[in-house]
Length: 332
Image 1 (cartoon, helix red, strand yellow):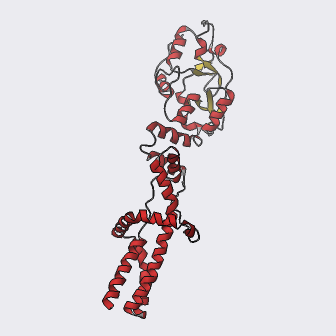
Image 2: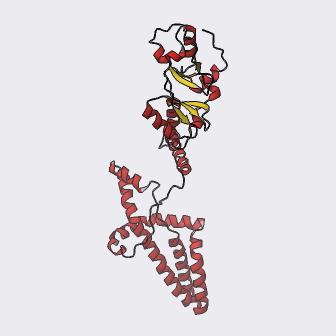
Image 3: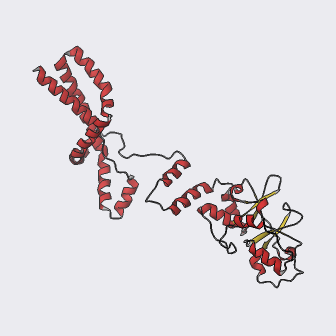
């Protein structure tokens, strides 16, 4: 009799650990994505949606089975080893069976056993739905998570192989950072700015040199870079009968708009759309010129790649500026 009870007790204990280690197989896709695919006539996704709805009851059923096995094991331990030793063993098992169920080889066995029984467990859950609503577990079957930071979202986007193209990833990541990026991060600094003095004559040689800078707009300066008096639009000069007597001051647009270097790109884009200006002078707190920023610069920061301006010549504005610093402009 003792041998029979001992074998039955061991069997009940093993079954308890295996059932405690069982966990429903979750879909790697979210419930939202499964429903979206199901709405697009994906029959496999539709089956998974139905399965997800039953998993909560499956979890509840497994918890009930664990409770019954614990009760059965308690009676068997007392019957096999007596009240004193049986009680001690019950206390030890209550504290340790969960840890045993988390062991790797136990989890592997439990997973295999669950795979064999899953279809039956789902049928039981479906048939007992009316009863289970009174004793249903509060455990959510879906692995719901909440993003902790924008950096975490950017990491998820970076790891989304096969879902987003490299261009898609770049666009999303740069769009996320756009609102917090400061103008000073993308501007062409004062030392790199190609400009023209207001007193300079716009002769043929000067115009040719201006076009070779690669810019469609140039700041017009007075005494120095801290005194910008206008903006010269090169495309407008093509329609003019330029003579040597015409200076940059006469051909320029006298409207100059400013941005502070600590303002965000969101503010810069809003200002450009509101004023219909494509070039802004960037100043510091002392109203000194520290750089310029163009609509192209802002859009490039938004989409994460270079765009070609009509006068870029397939080079970036900053690259052309750096090149022009090392070229001596021929006198008109």
